[in-house]
Length: 343
Length: 264
Image 1 (spheres, rainbow over the protein chains, first blue to last red):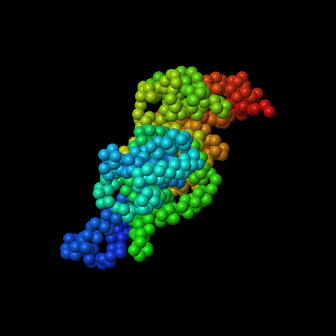
Image 2: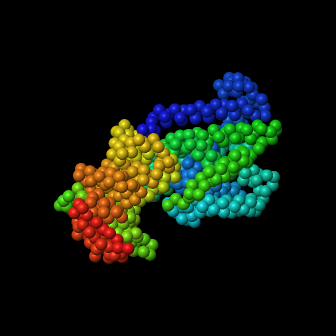
Image 3: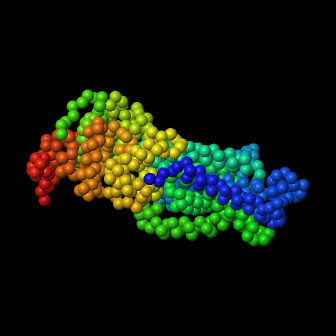
């Protein structure tokens, strides 16, 4: 009988880590100013006297790589959690409108917070509150508990996203933030406006959310079978569900407050990894964190180096990949599939 | 088969249990007990409240009145985890949205004994394999749940319940999707479970099999217990006509036990 063993767990995560490190190394080498591997290596070792190179590596490229890793990991991990909690492989923070809620919270703080004396540090918590409110609404409207129908969920997400986008544009106009394309870029999702001081915040939120969900990953297996089954097997579903929702909101809030609305990472990565590794959340959850980090880093590196001298927003990139992928999942599942009503 | 006579301390007991779901009273003043060593069959028309009885014994519904006593403990005072070590149940139908393998599914039966983190121990795996072979489906261990037929899925869920090593087994129509051979197999496993000291409550629509496997039968109609006792006393045309609202004839089968024939 095949079961999750320590060696399967270890080798899978090691493999994904190696892939991620290799991609990160490549990403640090790539950019408009040419830096060779030996040059970057000597900067990293502290041997380099080349001040511009040191500046590029430490102030531009490494923060950008870290940001992509943290945001990607947060989005993919919360995707896995939502899919298990809602028992639906189509759940994704972006599609469900949870990212939209986080974005609305963040924009509200950005546009109105200054007049109440809040600084930039208040933006991630505001995004976190926004995502919590969106999740609350989702549960309230789509039925709550295990009675969530896929159709109800997706419709609620679509409507909430439309509402959040409108409210964001409204707030941004009020605050005079519409100049240029800052808000637009943020709605599409991008990592180019990276602020280095965001990274510790993001890292903290991700670490907290990831740790909490990893501790509950075995319970997540049971919860994904449904409320009734989980309770029969001794899981205190109410309490654990709350912790899981809290940790995914933390991660979504942090990711969105840093990078805007990047969609579909939480859909594509968990789905592919589930095909490869199976649905056991003890492995799927950490693997998705690493996989999401790899995927967003890859997309962002391509997005910023594809065109000479110009960056594409990475959110446009993931949506271009994710939209068709979502439709493919819907089509393939057919009647009684992912859109089937889970009771 | 004899009716086990046992003290209160080895019983699962419903005492005047009432359950209200929304506006509807689903159970009304339901009292009965299952003792260790016996199989009790729960019969009744659709919507009579049979599944609610099973869910109440899992703490899946709130009681409006009365209490459920599990041996020396009030059920409501146990932790969910403790309860899962003592009572295992199989629901009517379980949707598995993700493609867990049969082995993974049965291993989840060990959850009430495992810590939050960590891998399945070798004794967990041995136990799971044992439960699978008891149900005759050891060869399905690495198959995915969503590739199985409804009947095979039911066998997996019963194996998972056995893997919980409970003292009490609650089965909600465990044989609904099974062919005759497997129905008999499942009921044999249930008998073996009670011979080894467990107690079982089995919801069934198969009156003939219930009469042959259960020590006692309990008939529920519109949320109330309308009859209880040994099969020969309960399976009478009067009781069944009252419970099911259908004219039936009860004849003696070749084994001396009652056979129920609906009059069309």
